[in-house]
Image (cartoon, rainbow, N blue to C red; front, top):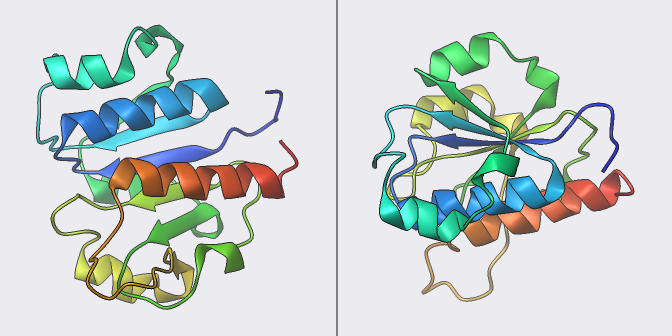
Length: 155
């Protein structure tokens, strides 16, 4: 892919190595930058992380951040898009431009409450019809949203 500004997936304190590995593989396949915000709930040497990413790790552009505040301080707010189950605005309502940052919270807690309040107008969800299901898997959600962003950018 030859976009001038790559898309970005941001995982805040990811906890499940298989999800991060799958998302890393997704990022490698689409030339999307993966941002991992510490603390991570696993070692980057974790066998499940490596297995989920298979042998694609050399093709993934990964940036590590020590804190979410550090990450936010270096980004333009207009390029940030947050995903949560706690809002009603569908991800299809977002207008993703090249260089967008797709931000996802940790698997067990999602995004911090203060982030949802501060960026409420930049928060989106993936609608689900069954109220008995709390959320989709993080890797699946990231893939759905990323491919919508790619579609909007004609890629």
